[in-house]
Length: 529
Image (cartoon, rainbow, N blue to C red):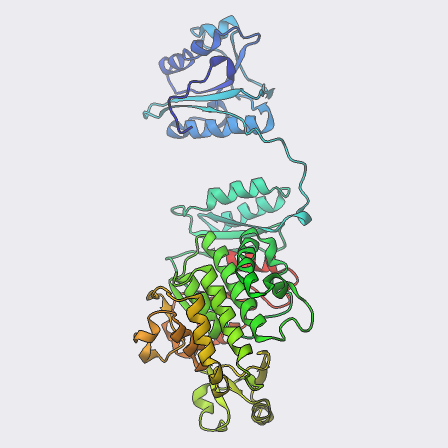
């Protein structure tokens, strides 16, 4: 179709669709095209037809309607009848001589490996065109078993909410067919002017579809969670998604020289799956890289990027500051430095008070590790000290819960001995990171230091600062656009409670949920929303 000079032999033609225009003169001219293709020694008359009898006069749209009709013929092997045809024009010799035959009833289409059909149109509004089509050579597939396929996300749009619902209803009723879903997805992927209602359906479908009225384009914010979002077997099902699985395979190869089995870390469902801080960091970062690749492949790009603790490695990756290899090896450096530094055993706990509310009463032997939101912060210190203080808070009715950190008191004085090794390892695996863009709101430094030299790149110095000192996540929240769709990328939507409370008016969409029975469907639903 891209080369207009291709010559098609007339004997390959098995059906000709001619779009009639009002007026005998045009009608005669149109049918007189046929003699150029009929005198080729055919054993039977060439089937001809027109879509005009089926839907009336469409003028400029005649050609498109005719193409739809012949595609139906190519897909089914049956030529739809030309309705309302009564008398043939006597001036058309091919009809009188029997070389042409008007299809007035549903007729089998001759389908050979080299056969083609043609559509010709000539309208009063200068809609002149001719096209030649050939059937898709693929053999009909047996009915597909949905249980043997990864669920498919199909997005739709329409001019009204009712039409969006009707389109989704039609797809729901159709047999499971991945080729059909791809066709529908390709049709609706471009933004269609006036189609301000969007819908989506997960195939095979469940009960509900989501329909959202669309106004102006909304900002998109990627939020990368940190420690505590890991859980046993967190990537087992997600690896069925080709882009996700291929990403994990690459990351696995990057880590093999370090003696690390990444795929085992991501799929181990045992009670000791994350008994080591190295496994925690690598599992979180690997999932975040893979989820990022899935979103980018779908054309989703962030206008704003925020990370919490180790989640800032995800920021560095999506912002183009580091490659996949540099990002996953930086995560390795973070965990390996903790393991190699002989750190004392520590503990972290999230509490239901903001750092401003607790700073005056927190014991001197406990550090405020993370500013999460105005109503949440994370404490870090020795297990006995943190347990004693959190028990006091619980007795007062304040929420407090231990964070799974494999016995490492991150973002506290107790992790400072890891600093020399951390910088050394980071300089070896990612010596030259690129500068960050304005999209990335850094949380490894206070807001008034975001433009300092330290925060301009995810260098070894910045990443060390990120691990050793407090996380200023709360301070970044006001900079997320008020109209943003906030997408949380992590093995688990850890930050959802505080994001919902802290970001009213935004749409919060976690891509994953701990222990969800169908992580792939959950992910597709989140993307659909």
